Image (cartoon, rainbow, N blue to C red; front, side, top):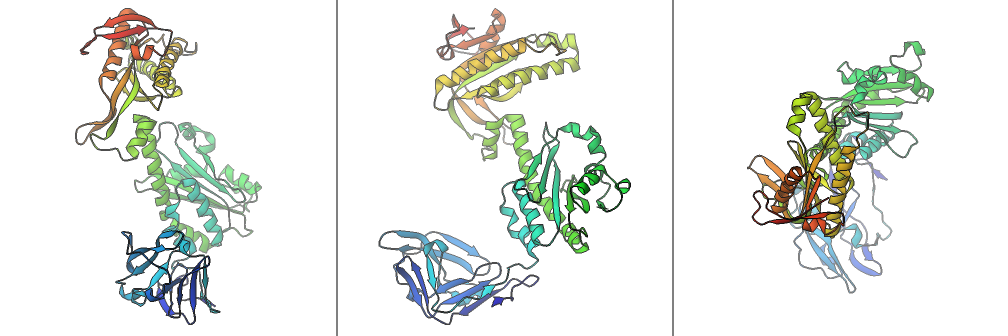
Length: 513
């Protein structure tokens, strides 16, 4: 018989009952426990749990381990290892030795983790089957406790649609248009289609705002704060509010809804639903979705904030560095000493170019310079750390192979020089020339700055030497000047001798391309 005591719409409950019969808990052929005094705990949302008195445990248990867990209904659980002849089961059993009042009936009794045993014999008796455990309906209940563990917006969208179907909402298509804070894409549109295994994700650029198909769409209507959209698709096409409705009708949809998903900062995103039921959506179904829309918004907001943080960090400090910051390296002094090749690439004659071109054209040229140089760095395994005025600072960390780091830095430098010299004829900018210095050595890679304003960068002599070598290249008309450590891994360099560089204590053996 199914227990209905804790069914949907009722309060959370715990019920402890003495099991009428003999219980045996086995691991293979080993009997872990045998008892006629076992108790069964029935708890909302959980499977029935068997507890037996400590005296009825038939195998040795260790002293209580350091592991503790807390339940607001049962108290603090302490764990023990199960000691067996061939192996031990770490933290295989637990007990509440000072159980809270509503669970006092299992005080001192032993519970078994599922992986500890392989079989439970009930001596002909049986446990009562629990009704589906929720106190607010399955869809709301899932949002309250299950949805939080989904790691990606795609998985959340898919699970949400499937839960709607399970709850009787006749949806055939669902999409969530979530606007983002990203320099290249305006947002992401997650689309679930009934019968398809995968979520389709689209990441349009900012040109979307000017596209006619968006201008005349429910997404634009709702995002502009003009309210939601509801359209029964049985009406003549001339009476449909937006062109997409005709397309959905041809796919078999009978009803369409677009509603706002508002973030806490006021940003209006859009959730759309289409139904293929002959009668479309019911009032009860739509009422449920409108009731939970604010909760759905919060889940998407968390995903979006996480993606925004990653995108902004990658945009401003680079992919590797951004990952380190997101990983928790956010305090002054956090960082490592690493071996790396350092590249300093400086735009030549920048002051003259700015005066000649004017501010707007000069900024276009500067952006072209940064983009071309950054592409060369990233395509050869490096990372741009920062733009310093009209210069680029990049790092090529040694990942087990110093020669490869130096070789990659050299390839990136050559590629940058060649790409800048061969910009397409369609580029309206004048010729761009640069001066690059490459050095190698040990640097500190981490956070420096004040207590409240940090910079994730490289600090050390190689960074200074790379900048000075680049400056020297300007004076002698060479595009690439490198230290001896870098030149050792490439045969295309000519020696310049030992150079005395500004703020560098010892002369540096240098080479030019």
